[in-house]
Image 1 (cartoon, rainbow, N blue to C red):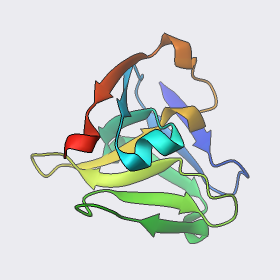
Image 2 (image 1 turned 45 degrees about the vertical axis):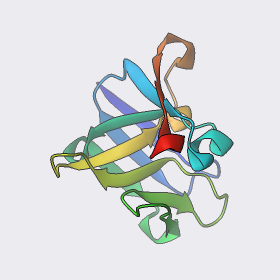
Image 3 (image 1 turned 30 degrees about the vertical axis):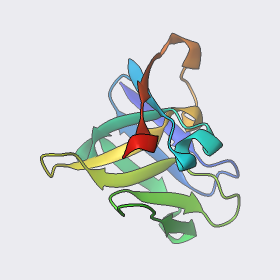
Image 4 (image 1 turned 45 degrees about the horizontal axis):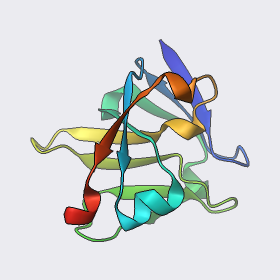
Length: 115
């Protein structure tokens, strides 16, 4: 199944292939303040449809994840990174997907504060 998502203002849009069953809810200083529910998918299952020039990047801590923000509305709908094996990944903020029932997703707690 293909899902579509956007930032708040709609300048950035994307689509992802797959069906989210679980999302990660991290307690690090960044994710907890933003309320992210992250669905990690292989990078080739993510497609940016519009708004590449509307994005800016934020990296912190170990600079492993390139958090992408809309320059207009500041919404972070996704990020780019790699898994432990080095495979390219996308971390999609499930809250930015148009047709997802968030209450149906299993939330996996991640202790990011300890990293």
